[in-house]
Image 1 (cartoon, helix red, strand yellow):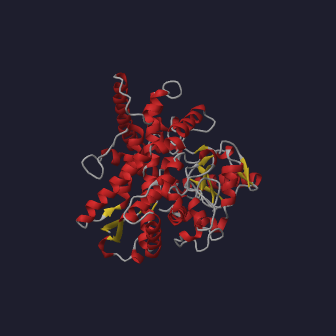
Image 2 (cartoon, one colour):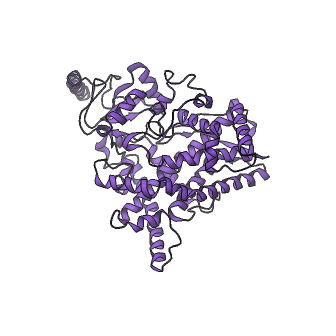
Image 3 (cartoon, one colour):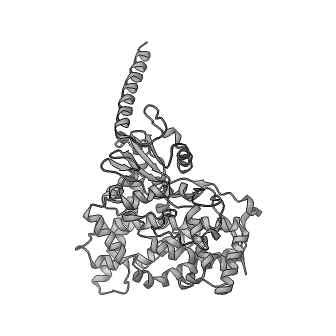
Amino acid sequence: MDYINILLGLLFVWILVRGVLISLRRTKRVAPGPFPLPIIGNLHLLGHKPHISLTQLAKKYGPIMNLKLGQINAVVISSSVLAKEVMQKQDLAFSNRFAIDAVHACNHNDFSVIWLPVNNSQWRTLRKIINSHIFSGNKLDANEHLRTKKIQELIDYCHKSSKVGEAVDIGRAAFTTSLNLLSNTIFSKDLTDPFSDSAKEFKELVWKIMVEAGKPNLVDYFPFLKKIDPQGIRRRSTDYFTKILHLMSDLIDERLKERELGNRENVDVLDALLDICPGEIDRNQIEQLCLDLFAAGTDTTSNTLEWAMAELLKNPHTLEKAQKELEQVIGRGKLIDEADVAKLPYLRCIAKETFRIHPQVPFLIPRKVEEDVELHGYTIPKDSQVLVNVWAMGRDSSLWKDPLEFKPERFWESDIDVRGRDFELIPFGAGRRICPGLPLAIRMIPVALGSLINTFNWKLYGGIAPKDLDMEEKFGITLAKAQPLLAIPIPL
């Protein structure tokens, strides 16, 4: 009998709270959305692939949708028009981050250019340093030889596999290439042996951080669980962050000793940062910035390259057309130079189409409003998480003809670009929070992809027919291919 009284009491409280919420909604006119259940709200509607679930819900409730995810209010934006409003016209109001619990490990959120609020002077300084010392046009031009070297190592690895008829795990190979490109840019050295399992710890650490950050975490929906950490996500993240930060610290110590001895051969990102330390940036910030660069710049690039290769192998006519362009412009069997990309319009179309149909961060990085904000006639309540569903926008039939088909030709006579000005295609975001690594990504991906398809022919491992290639996605903070792409390089 006591249990029945307790249940009735809880039901009464819920009805009372729900009545208050409905009253507030009427006053504030929040966006439409599904009716929330007690305690869990709409969490049960997310499923294993929230980007798909929320796209389907948006068809019912509209391009601006309000959800209750546990204790958190969330607003999902699913149209390019509203995305422009959020990231351009009202960019400042929507510019702060909803920092997931995993990145509170080692207090990373307090130092990270990804998670710091934009009105923080530290964020402005870090962003300025990144733009001027790492991803400026001059710096990227000066480091082109490093990218060429790393892509040559990728091709050499594929040559070794081709000699014995072994399949290449495209995603893992691309990940190693991206990782060592970044480590050479920052530290002038590889941090993992190229394509060897003998020194893979660092590679695995970066991968594990991305996995933990991408897991659905109860703490993000029920903040009162923060001290308990029921899934152990922050505990594991703290372990991985600590190991990487120690490695960064060791590399900085090593460089400081070299500089004391007058050795200035390595004029790289680390030298540039140490030159302005401690005036503009301190040592801890350098270590945390390096962690940001490795976490954000490896998985995204390698996944995009894997998806592009998967789409080409699934669509042989598109691959043949790309190879024909490469043969005519630079000749078969050669690596692509960055200067060549301007003369390869179809290759650029393939890169754009991959960004459209496989955006690496399907909701971008979650945003947060610090005060009530008016948007499209609705109130976005204070402290709401704001998700911009770029995955849905890439499949919007009002924007794209045959949106589920991989058709690079759709960009043939289109000026739409990925640099944050055309809101139909914003895989890197837009506004103040646009990904600072965009200039590197748009140089790296076409060159790596073009080099892979120009130096080899490819066939799917296991005799899989192109039409049968599994294109399932695995949801996380980045959108990976559920089944790794295994392909056999065939020498020309």
